[in-house]
Length: 169
Image (cartoon, rainbow, N blue to C red; front, side):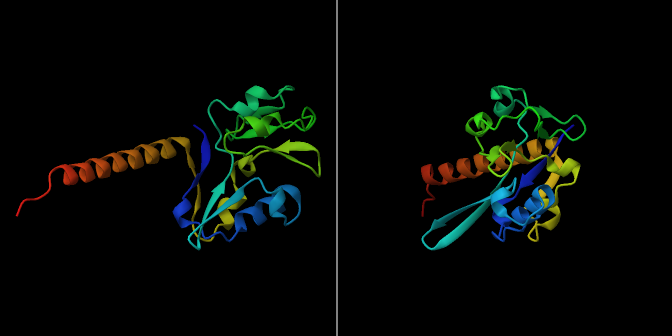
């Protein structure tokens, strides 16, 4: 059973501590541009929303499938994707293939990087002050997603029923 970083976007304050902690641990410098977790910011009527984005550790990972040098594999201990720098040619194929934008070529080293979940102890999760990031088993994520989908169906059904059957006076 693998583990993943579960993102609670509604709890994210946009502080970027996850990016700073990640870049310091993995790249040796406090530089959010070199972080393996990215903060996506959007603005709507003056209100900002923040969503952390990182490798989703896909069961069938497109990044791994398109790599011409087979540099991407799954770490058997943690379940996280890893990139063998000795095989990576920095071609960006993984970047283009990833639907989440989680793989990218770090221009300083000329190689692709991806979240390795800090070998089973993700720094981003530890430094997140708002609890927006959680390290959980993949099975827990599947259950949470199913519950959320069921809640949305129930809400939509209740809303439709109220619209179709207005209360009479």
